[in-house]
Image (cartoon, rainbow, N blue to C red; front, side):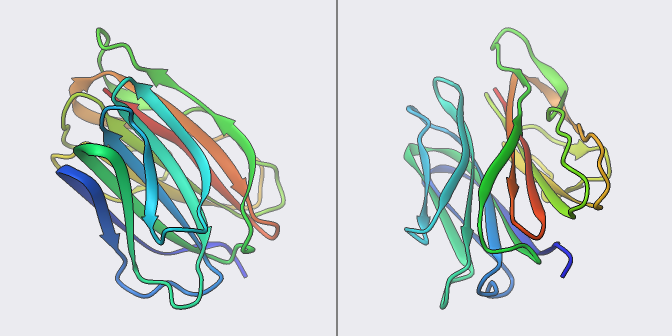
Length: 222
């Protein structure tokens, strides 16, 4: 069975220590759910609280003293709800993207990672590449990356390289995905947006035995 995106959802919120995203359909038992979380809170610690257990932390990074971007993943369990909730250490602005992936073995293991950043508050940009990653040939993959804007919202978000962005508008964060064929190659898409923001990124690739799920750089913009 080829790896594929079954469904996805995203939510941006402000003035809260939690953010919840509800998928259209109940996720299928045995599929993998991947979430991308961004938050601007003191301490910048985020975690998944719904469901409360079963999560693997793929990558979690503070882009500065008060901004955080993270990726978590889990195997869908019996009677799992279609609503997923991320929590931060204090109220602030947050976003949560949720991806349900079918066709991958129900295990999660870190394979490779890539990073890119422009986190200086004095240096602002309106475009940033997510960081170069070269998956091994012979397996289909699904790549996911995310971006978090430090310091305020942006508009007109886009990404190149054939990736599909999940949400745009006057927002602080979003994410994108791409199903990759079983040939080798290097992938380094770039996000673009309006309003100058400082930026930082982090990424990793997670492998399921039959297929690969690539978590390309989370981007954090100040």
